[in-house]
Image 1: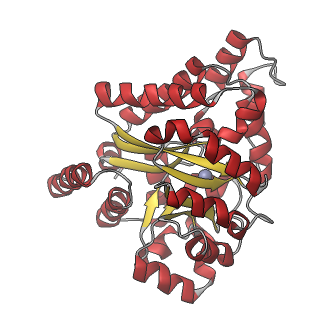
Image 2: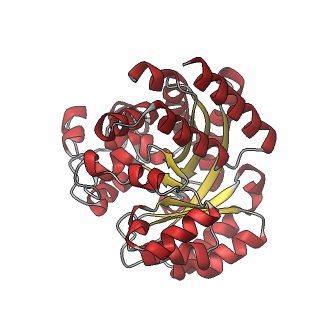
Length: 334
Ligand SMILES: [Zn+2]
């Protein structure tokens, strides 16, 4: 099964680029930029990656961001992720970034977007990896701040496909961001939102009804509500599920209890993703391996998950078709 997963053509739809910041690169950029890190070694930084809830992680995640200052930093960060993804047979990626984690530190929007974009362009040329970029709003901040960020993104509209909603979920329901999502939709952005990771099923419902999202990021807690499950199945609203993230943040107590199998059994459109791979112990392959081992998934189920990823992506139709053909060829050969 491991070999089957290693060579499986993959698509990633839920990955925060700032969450791909490996400690080695973080130390390297900190040195380059003269930024002091509150850890004396790579090992002590890694030891801090013991989380019991989402907020524990977010505190370290924002601290790590402070190191990112220049366009070159964003390029290097993104490039490292793409090189890694290439070794894991990832064919298409949809990357989140958090402008509100950078703009208040005086980092220009152009440095963030251009750095990421240049790496994505190079990955297409070198590895054939295609991509879409999704700008997330930090939900612990107010909606006015999100609207300002949407406005700041206007000159880069051609480079950004969609908007999303991330950061501390509890106490910050999707309803708080109804207006900014409406504005973004009117401007032609695709919409996604984190919901049902730590928050209740009601947040998933709000994301669908009020924010009119194309996909739900996570969505685990939707399973608590059978009517919502029916709606997710009928509309085939994709869920970008992140198994290793869920166990690392104690959203799921053990991988053997991970809901992704149940999602598949219920006919939901579940996909596999890495979320913040540098912090949660693995990229795409490790996530597929973890659920396959713990839940005893078979090849057919793995192919379904991979197929869901392609079909749920924002890639142009032709690209999706090519990816589906590659996957179906792979499935018939292995
Ligand atoms: Zn996420």
